[in-house]
Image 1 (cartoon, one colour):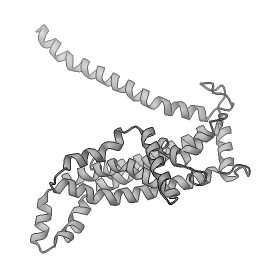
Image 2 (cartoon, one colour; image 1 turned 90 degrees about the vertical axis):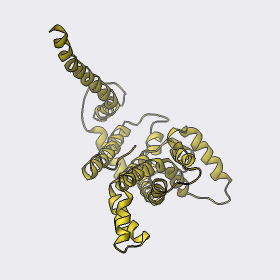
Image 3 (cartoon, helix red, strand yellow; image 1 turned 120 degrees about the horizontal axis):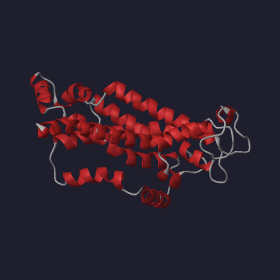
Image 4 (cartoon, helix red, strand yellow; image 1 turned 60 degrees about the vertical axis):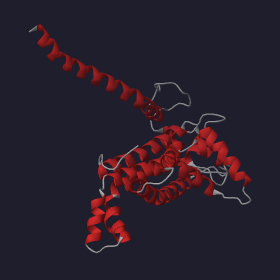
Amino acid sequence: MTRLLLRAALPGRLGRSTGLLATLVLFLAALPILTLIVMSFGTTSTLDFPPAHLGLRWYRAAWHTFVSPDASDPLSMGTALTTSLIVAIATMLVSTAVAVPASYALSRHRFRGKPFVEQLIALPIVYPLVMLGLALLIVFNALPVELGMMRLIIAHVILTLPFTIKNCTASVAAIGPEFEEAACLMGAGPYRALLDVVLPLMRPGILAGMLFAFIVSFNEFTVTFFLYDINTTTLPVWLYSRTVSALDPTVFSFAVFTVAIDFALIWMLEKLMGDSGIAI
């Protein structure tokens, strides 16, 4: 009887311990963001935590910086935000255009060197970003033409391809070849079956990859830091520039704005697709 009671009690204790551990890990993961949010409501120029007084001083200053930038500042926050949006949207579109046919080929066809190609696609996830940024800087500087903003777009496409291809590949893997065979038996050609049957069923993975590509590109700093110039400064680099010589507390407010955008995109991703078609 004692052994039976112990066996019955163990799952409950294990569940409570696992829940406590999960709560602790989630709290530690959210702690930097919570600290950032609290600091954005401070009213002093110091980094004391928690702030002695709370208010909207730095949000008002951030809004003033956005609508009325300093004329002596060669780069405004609005310009940096516009550049980030352009680069992120272009990266999202290019990465998706490459990922859809690539994921279909990797899922449906066998060819020599396929495992190597799959490893090569995932390489940017584990490659040191500092070394990648330095390598891209050397390559772009060796080119006879000035690429401008295209340097950032190319670099961001390299970084986001693993996310878009993985999500699209997961969607293709869930679509059996019998769907295409049925379409072909009903008179559709291979390309018509691909456009009318496969692509609509791939929609969850495509949308998930697009949103991930946008989020990664919009927040990318390390590689961008090696490739930007005064005309192609993104929002993360602009925020960093406000903390180099002296900390500008308005960066906390701008950072909360960035986190809110990312949260909204992730929420949109969950509402559109739930857990289907998502592979990180």
